[in-house]
Image (tube, rainbow, N blue to C red):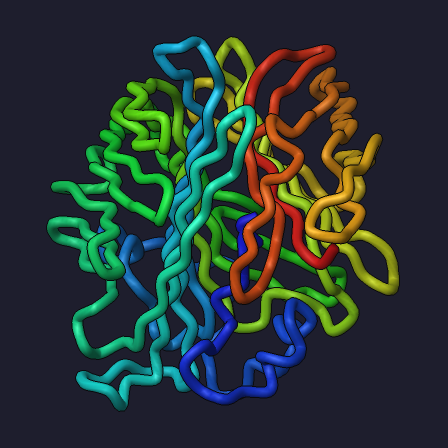
Length: 346
């Protein structure tokens, strides 16, 4: 959900107790780091860039695509930043750690790759004017956030895509202050859910030209989960007609916490409070040795939404250092559409 993979906390290049705690470590102390506050106004283009005083942050792009062969595809491109200390320095002493995830999902197969880097040495980072987010040769870049190119590759896949924003930025929660628990943990969270996308997927069977729609999530925080919260289910759904829904469920020992944003086709929004959206697993599949919900019922009564959300490929498992499920979905029922689903903690 952006709670969206708060996995950046993985502290991959240094020992840390968070390593052993997994997703539960995201509820640990934020001592020494800044924490989000309600009522803060965003500052663009600066806020498209990194915030090293916060512990975790990501630039997270997913896209639902249609190939020239008529089949559905999905891609993911993510850059995570995780801080050991709340500042940035040049060289190998930098406390900032970067991780990249990329994936392509077809109706038959899920391909993924991972990259890791220390900050301060130029191997990974984000610049705002012009915009560029990179790790090694993977790049999201353009004159600004409205017009971007996107590249990544793995052992069996790659893609070269062009993105063009067809609507405004969207701010979740209270003008971008997104609460994640009854205890008040929160993040700053905004999205660009209106990208049109075109380009080429590079697959073992050959290149495939694709077109479709993309959704970028931007989020940063220092303690985004409560101590008892161990995982989440995050949905980004795009309906025929242009309306959209972002919704998430955080699972914890004291019960679930939900939040959602209804996004009208013109980009105007309504915040949906805890308990108002219903996210109900309908069926599970055995994925990577675990029972993972791959069909869901999503109900938002105030908007007449009652849909079934189904994974395009149930085996869309990200076997990265912190494992999770991430893949494209189809939407049927009261509304038709497509989207993306992320699930952690299973």
